Length: 162
Image (cartoon, rainbow, N blue to C red; front, side, top):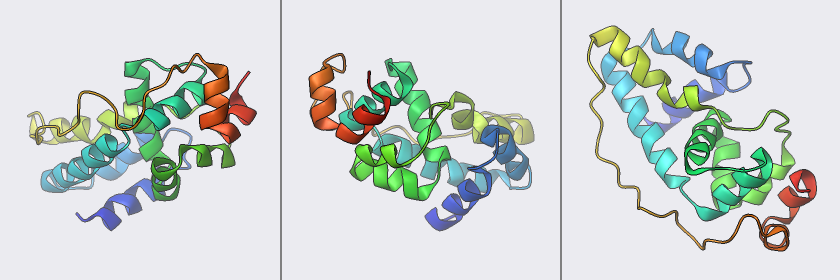
């Protein structure tokens, strides 16, 4: 599976009420090798989104964001599709252009391929070791500092901030 095929799968489910369930239905039609390939792309994008600016965006949109919450946010960000994902990785403030009334986080979306692979094979999916650094990329700041949030992510702060 190449990256275009990966994103084509996401595009089919991104607007569904429960994308994590819709994608599982698609995964049931794929061979285990295709699920492994999908997961490699997913993991790579997940690591790419490990950025302080995106964590700040998650904090503002979600009304707070722990490290586990940021994991769920990145899963959900991938589920929103290629355009939203790629634009937000370059400039998280672009997330203000969309309505995320219910937030972005989606923990279950991150496990969907793993669950179907195990269901199909009876084994855990083999995965490459992570290349994710211990700390997010970019400059850290105090997300509780409203002035700093407004300075770094002005559109998101105007839309979701206090």
